[in-house]
Length: 96
Image (cartoon, rainbow, N blue to C red; front, side, top):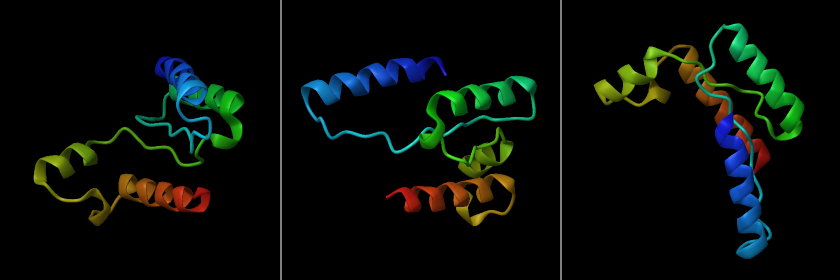
């Protein structure tokens, strides 16, 4: 979340100096788990970014590490994480 403020500033600089048409497609919450902190962060993101916050969030999961270690695409595996990425893909397609 701290990095989002820096990113917003950078995007504004780019829009001012280089590309006034630059738009952010969305904000994707990642490393989300079942803690109160994660829920609170999602709430803050929703309040601040509303429409550009993706409905999908990506969980903190060992499945991603295993996928990289085994050199198998995450999208070909089964489980919660691969489903989350499929959902994200659909959202991106809808926004484009």
